[in-house]
Length: 113
Length: 114
Image (tube, rainbow over all chains, first blue to last red; front, side):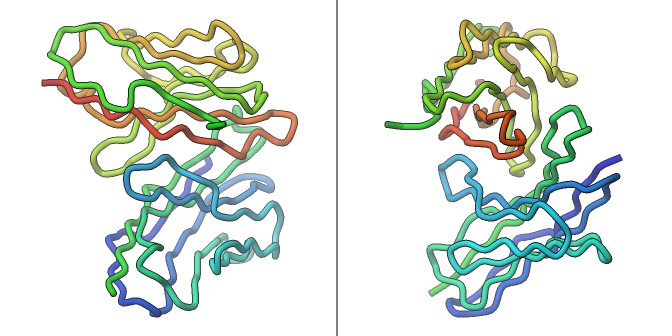
């Protein structure tokens, strides 16, 4: 079946540090992959997406590349800010999976000044 | 001009009570969802409606009953509330014609059952 595995948090970094949050997936066919972010007290919002192999999604300094050979979609940012403190969710969408978005468990990121 | 709105934002109630949460989207989307997020941030799909028709109904106690009066609204009614129902409930919407994968979330309703 389809599944998403994210690295466990919490992740704590100092401002301007490099961020990587690992995400790997299991799926049949050619899923689309997403990163959503949830800031404290808010709903989730789409951060970036990639719909086919080797696509790179990017937004707000964050990047993730769809790697079919390693079934991964790791989230990276070169220099984090305090305002990036949030919970990050990796997700997978497979059109044949009854329209369900498969979610990772979320990774909490805290950035200290 | 909020895209997906929910009311109330906070709901504190006693065990055994019945309560409702309302959701409205003004994006013109044809699909709406209810998610439950527990204290560990685990996100679980509960229901999905497409054009007022139920298309996803996960293993949720039948104390939970969604109602979609039109495609812009999806309400959640909960009977006989239990302590374990305490969570944040998120409404979301999407447009199937554009793949259905992009979800637009409401701000959440924090339900506390005492």
